[in-house]
Image 1 (cartoon, one colour):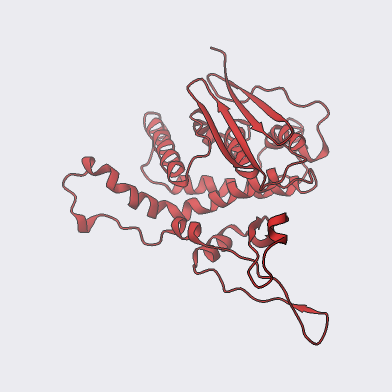
Image 2 (tube, rainbow, N blue to C red):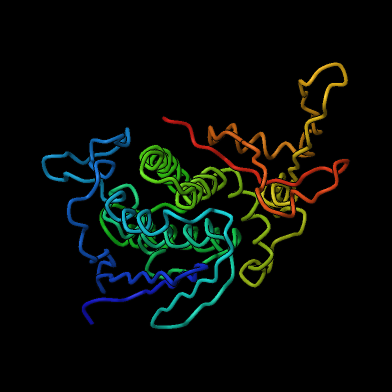
Length: 321
């Protein structure tokens, strides 16, 4: 078998977009042909990652950007909050799931980025080989730690040697965070749609969450491995100290309508109480993301009672650097 095919069918309101990803059976690198006459934003030196080891004389285009071109072009008319039905077909299974456009795009990026040929994502290529669409945070922690430890095992059988610790994994995600921000900066002028942009933001949030969540998530998973630790006393087992993941999931963001000033036409913003969690601040501070609240523009919002809060959506914007 020379190649492996993974197909994504995205059922949009007016059409179905089909993406066939052809990957080398041995290296699992993407084999799809590069687009002809790619746009300027795909050039390697256009908003290049600060830690990129490639040079434009050998690599005129960014490996990640050139692979994102097809998604960007075909998702121009989509919004990140559009509900879509996605179908993923692999040799082993078929997955059908309804989700929003940004999560569908993020799932595709989790396959594209590791297989793109970018030297900063190559370590994640085993995750592409065992691609799990729309994986939960807990599933991703289990997969990525297992992948990393298996990599350390292979290193231990070579002259390089391996270590059973996760600082190297944290360092890998720190480099991915730099890449995510640079790619997001490229995309600002590439498309009017926010679908792929927000998908990158979701991945960047995860890159930021891994160092914060890793210790606590592993402490929670330790109970699954009791058969390996029969003599361990309950009071000696590590305990999760701050479950950022559960807290951020429970955080609720709302938009409150502006109240009119009785003395003038000017309006003042009614301040909503801050989210009841420090996890939001921790995540934003760690990732340098900006939190922006944007109203959802649909008929339901227009019919909302004037004295009730208008629900909106939280958008995390990446800085230029």
